[in-house]
Length: 162
Image (cartoon, rainbow, N blue to C red; front, side):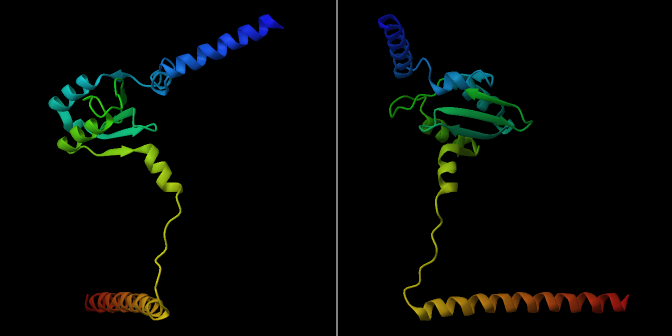
């Protein structure tokens, strides 16, 4: 009774302590999947051959999980990203560096959030504006159909001449 409770509590305290101090952080679990480089090594890669980087994706709630995808399809991670307003290894500093080289960045956690959020519909203040919008849409459709018919007639005339 007492012994099993004590071992259970010691395991729970050990796991919670490890998660609080970061020894079981998501990036350390994730690090086994990809080869990792430090931010300084990544900056050296950018200085030498920034055109070989196709995109830098930042995952996790704070953007601390970074995946770099190269043009040839290979991927690697950056291991020492720290979410801090003063540390030069912060995710936003990395995004700034990438923007300086013209490399696109993507926050995958935020994109997942935005994809599932409901889209706003256009709200009209009165019926006249709503009717005008419907008529404008019908007008655009008629103009497009007329253009298609004109191009078809032109193509037929050119094919008759040949």
